[in-house]
Amino acid sequence: MSKIVVLVGSMRKGGNTDLLAQAFTEGASKNNDVEIVSVADYKNEALKEAYEFGLSIG
Image (cartoon, rainbow, N blue to C red):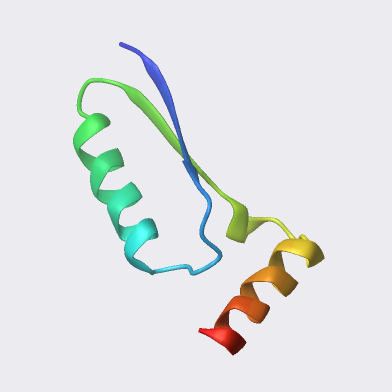
């Protein structure tokens, strides 16, 4: 059994990246110890501002 850490770099909880990470984790956890670490779970003003700025121009 291996230990796997899935790093999710998207600030959008429930978005495509989050769903993909969850699907991978579900499959990989059958034979491994898997943990998801998401930047959305941490309060980081710089990341939040960059995300909001991206929404305003995109």
